[in-house]
Image 1: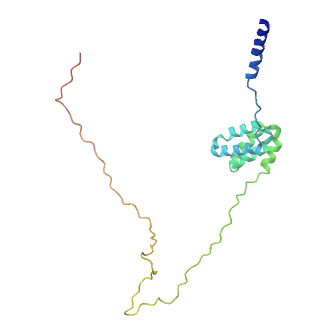
Image 2: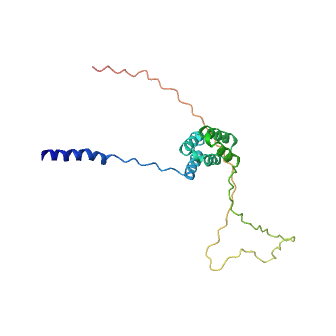
Image 3: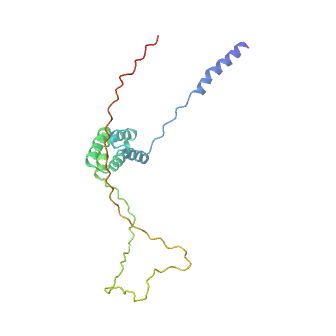
Length: 191
């Protein structure tokens, strides 16, 4: 009986650590589109880390070398010096995809920004007659027309132009001469 209980205890002790061990999960593979989007954003945010970010992306997913190179070129706005760095780095890290990288660079076209259709604005100008405006006759009075049932007048929009800032004089203050204290007794040392 004692051996049976000892065997059960050993069985429980041997099998329980197996249940407590963590199970290794597989890291999900990042797809090319997500990787290229993150690369584009990181290069735009920190352009000085272009080579480092490109190397990271190529190490993560070499099979997307063409898309990665295209995204990096987009991020630097196809500046020739930057494109040269991108191609050199990609060729160094993914030599097996050299033909894909060359094709991506050769077939690269800058994305076209779709601009909103511009609204046609009609410009109308007042036609001023050649004749002089009629002057009021003697006894006539010219007044501004007001709407009935309106107690306050309509505000007039005032346009002001910038006025130059007034020049201010600056005064430099000189420090006063230091006060000399000759008659001040010295402190006695404490015992």
